[in-house]
Image (cartoon, rainbow, N blue to C red; front, top):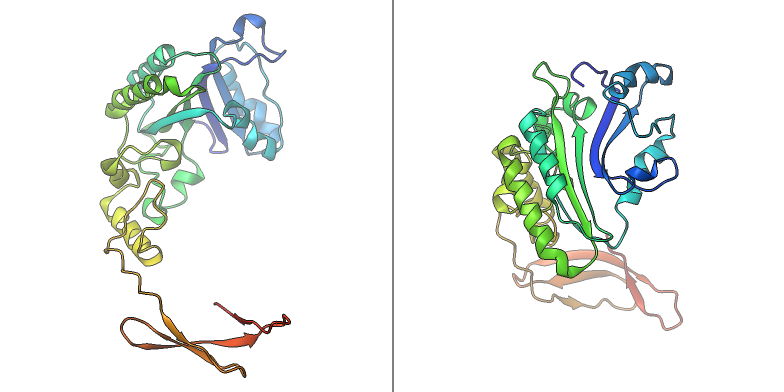
Amino acid sequence: MAAAPRELGPLAAIAPAPAPPMLPPEAHGRPVLVLLPVLTGDPATADEVIEPLAALGRPVADLVTQTPWLRANSMLDAVAPYGKRMNLRGGYLPALSAEAVDTLLRHAATAPQNPGAANVVNLWCMGGAISEDVAEEATAFSREGAACFSREGAAWLWEAVSMWDAAEHDPRYEESAKHITEAMRPHSLAAGYTNLTDDLGKAWRRGVHGSEAKYRRLQAVKATWDPDNLIRFNKNIAPTARPRQRPDTARCRPPDRGGGTREVLGPSRHRFRGLPLARATAPNRRRTVAVG
């Protein structure tokens, strides 16, 4: 990938083989390496660009073909059906080292197995527009170290996903997720892509977006737009300032029937001019208030 054109974006996945008719029966349910190349360049060059990947080994099946973008962007939806219990762990790799690969292979081989369950390890190649066209400090999501086509070699995002059905298996899968997180920590950057991993705690949240300066900027944005931290059931960034106290129920002086303006008296006794009131068209003559 260090020498590949930026229009090529591959995903490598280690997963149990599905059972479609185009795969031989002996492969069904067994761990396989799936290469998903997506070339967004000239279709006439596709075979030439993808040939080095195809030459890495003899595939069980070759299903690569020209595909509409909508289909390509949704082709993995079927591997994560709605209603599964699941956990995700992941992070950025500054290089695809042999040690990191061995760790992920061991996890794929030793993760819990149950009927209806699946364990998938994904490796996404970074670079191109997401890493090279926009400065690290210009976006909330970090791309730090993710320069796939630099002279230092390819940078990748690793992801380990487990899916199962029964709540009684939760502890086994949680323990497996903790194990792969710790095993991959020496190989991973502090920065990462928050959407492809579960929340790993306060220290992780402070580092996953990149620099400390960026985290403080995100805190300031949060303090401006959500000072009460109402949107907090996520990988939360707490606002810098303490949440403001909500005022007591304001007392309003109703206008006369001819319309007029609303005056609100808050706890500080300051007066705020309100918006004009409009007569309702309903027969009971109820009033409506336009709220901006």
